[in-house]
Structure formats: structure tokens, C-alpha cells
Length: 138
Image (cartoon, rainbow, N blue to C red; front, side, top):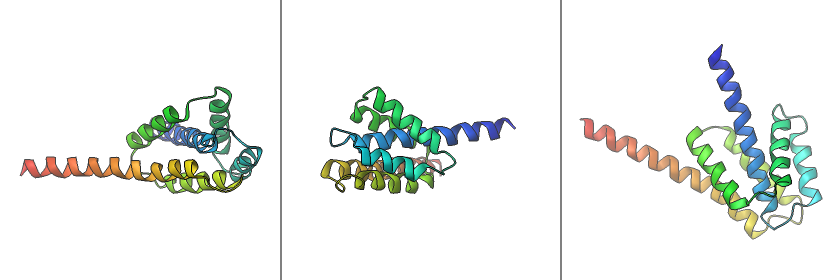
């Protein structure tokens, strides 16, 4: 039972982090536009974790959080969390939010592309370290 509870908390946290990442993308051009918020609410309106995503996004918005700091926090969390199929959903959601107002601009694109690249690079380094340590044991 405790393991299921921990899994549920991890699942909720990963969607909180998604809301933070969507805030980063929406604020990449310096302002969150109505179309972006509408797209967020539409995309997650019927989603099981939609409330967590929207709450997290609105929390960061209300605190006018620094997007570079939030981005690093998101990447660190996802790296610690490890590979997870929901990251594909993250990227889809980021694109929907970014496209909502005047298409994807260069800065929004940078964050979307960096999310994938940064995580892949960190996971690759972890795999390389694991292979090195396994090689040393033999």
C-alpha cells in the first residue's frame, strides 16, 4: 500500500513539474498570452492530472518565477526521476502552448528542444557511467 501511495505522489509531482515547464515555455517571450492559457486549459481540461498541471502553472505565474531557474529545476527533477514515457506528453503540451499565440517563436523553440536534448544528454551520461562501472568490475 505504501508503495502505491509513493507512486501516486511521484505521478502528481511529475505533472506539477510539467505545469512548471509549460510556464517556462509560455513566458519565454516575456508574457503569458490569453491564447496560451486557453490552450493549457483545453489540453488538460479532461486530463486525470490536469488540475495539478494548471495549478502549478498558475503558481509560477503568480510568483513571476524566473524561467531559467524553473527550467533548471524541471530538468534536475526529470533527470532524478529517470526516463519516463510521459515526457512525450510534456513535449506535445509544450508545442500546443507555444503554438497557441502566433506560433512557436525562437525562444520557445529553444526551451522545447533543450528539454529533450538536456534530458537525453544526462541519461546518456548516466548510462555511460553505469557501463564504465560494470566494465571495471570484470
